[in-house]
Image 1 (cartoon, rainbow, N blue to C red):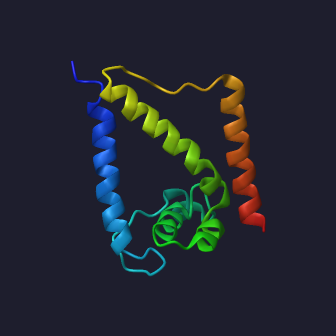
Image 2: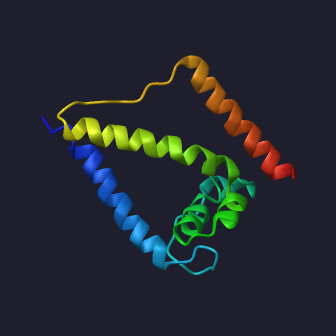
Amino acid sequence: MRHPAAAPSAVLAAGAAGAVYLYRTDPHEPGHVLPQCPFRMLTGLLCPACGGTRMVYDLMHGHFTEAWLDNRVLLLASPYALVLLGRWAWEGLHGRRWRPTLSPRAQLAVLAVAVTWTVVRNIV
């Protein structure tokens, strides 16, 4: 059986490697090896996470206004996601397995925000 810190450590290492690559690669300019959104490629519409790569790049370079314009909802959700990642890593390092849970009501709220954000950002 794997140590509880194995998965969070792997995610953090991959995230750090990705952050180093992204810091040196401007996603605002074409021609870089960066993932493309399959939803946008198929439909031409922005998904709830579109702009996330540009947002992270802008945050790492101190461009907060640009990050806000890239994806407002994802920017607002980022601190919560970082807290969850930190808790997962903390618990793993202390030998405990931990998974975040969302109540059905919270899951519905997340889905409603994602759908609303998708509709609004493609209309405006």
